[in-house]
Image 1 (tube, rainbow, N blue to C red):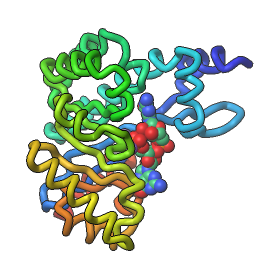
Image 2: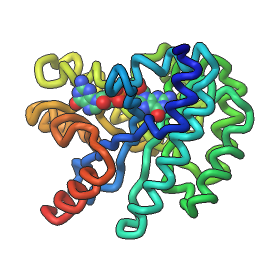
Image 3: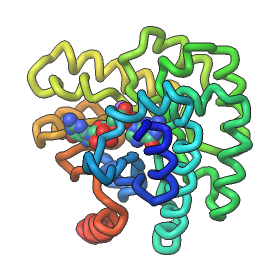
Image 4: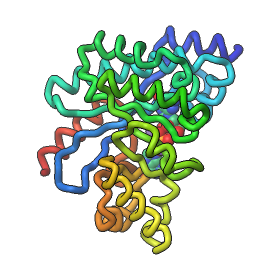
Amino acid sequence: LSLESDIRKALGQAQFFLVYQLQQPLSGARFNGVEALLRWRHPVHGVIPPARFIPLLEENGLIAEVGEWVLDEACRQLAIWHESDTGLVMGVNISAQQFERGDLAERITRIARRHHIDPRTLELEITESMAMQDPDASQRTLEKLRAAGFRLAIDDFGTGHSSYESLLRFPMDTLKIDRSFIEAVADDPRNRSVIRSMTLLADGLGLKTVAEGVETQRQRDYLHALEIDAIQGFLIHRPMEADACAGLLAALSEEE
Ligand code: G
Ligand code: G
Ligand code: MN
Ligand code: NA
């Protein structure tokens, strides 16, 4: 089977699915963020993580179609969760090719409307390197998305090469600090200085900070001291399917 026909089948036979990971606020506020992450349950190879197939989808130009499916499915699920939790915000990863198309704002608006989703409850995650490929075009796209009411996050923040410029140019709501900075936070004071400078910068610019890939309580304690707004990672829970995630959300909210 060629990849292309595998992927057409995957779309037709519901082999793609989303898992979800909650963001835990460190300020004592309630849980209100969740990121959708794509998985492929391949009939022969089992569950394939996105790092293995997204690059192939990009090469074959098939990512646009799969990306539309992701947005549609994330909105469908969010509409269900909004029945009991109207403030929940869903983060969705946008691929480079999806982002490069000029009509992204129109497409997402159409999908959100179809599911009666308030755009303010959808946060589109874009990496800095994607946005800096063609900064002028990116700025136009991001401003359109912002005007349509969507929230915007810079994903994998700190791994690109032009953080200050992108922060000034692009209308953003959230900085998602890359896992590589979080890994060493408990052991390396230099690392903490860098994260502290990120949170100060974010504060000054009115952005929310989310630390990705938090795995230990020690990391959490340091991130709390560094005034990160929210954390995401295996310490809270592994990404999981919608039903399990909904149960966890209810249990965690009751604990508070
Ligand atoms: O879920 P996991 O940690 O394995 O994700 C690996 C990479 O794949 C991350 O960079 C993540 O942003 C990306 N990714 C996960 N889901 C999606 C998706 O729906 N669309 C795109 N474009 N990337 C995704
Ligand atoms: O690039 P992006 O931030 O979208 O990627 C998120 C990826 O990180 C997902 O594939 C998710 O499965 C993974 N992830 C989430 N939490 C953790 C964690 O605590 N540790 C590690 N190593 N990976 C994580
Ligand atoms: Mn992400
Ligand atoms: Na990331």
